[in-house]
Image (tube, rainbow, N blue to C red):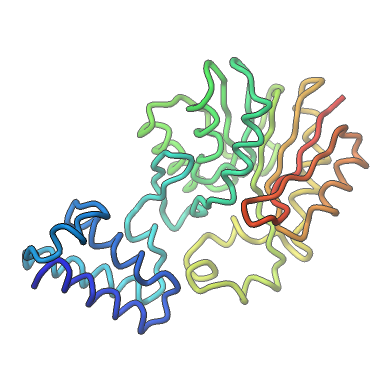
Length: 276
């Protein structure tokens, strides 16, 4: 069987299963197994694959057909130009979250102290550390399994960060110039309506924002000021319909210059403000 024939078979299997990006997923899985790139299909599509490669690809396609996320099969996800290890213990880094990192970077100066609340894979904190100089970072998460993944990502990226197990600010110490957070923000009753890849394979603790999806915003806004220097800033990723609620609670708590930023699709995605 040739490389192109195997790809077409995988594409057909995923399309039949209703996978939204069947062509992309089929190609990426084949490239992972064969160690190839996106141009290989066009230039060398008629080259044969080994039986071992064929068997591995069939196994990957069967997993993807069963709605296991592509990133869990590959074991990683690209984010901010960096590769992050992902497992079912952490939320898969998403492109929307890059907006949070980019907005924080506009206000990030060398040597700042950064706290990433609900750090998960560590992708937000580690991206900020990679693209700054001499900043000191701490990531907090209630999940010990998530913190292990974050630690692995720091090691793989040759970055230093402290990761602490903490129920929100329970075990956090010190003060920070910047606090960033992508907390769980999906209302509990919405979770059953999500794609199977999300509701069945990503950690519920990283998704469930309780009744109205705003629980963690309330708790973080209420307590973050105790951990921010004067002039320090609090940054949130939000659900696209939560800007009014989150910006309102930040203003009520006394944050100044509260700003809402949109993502590439024109949807509200980030809210931030300053402690004065």
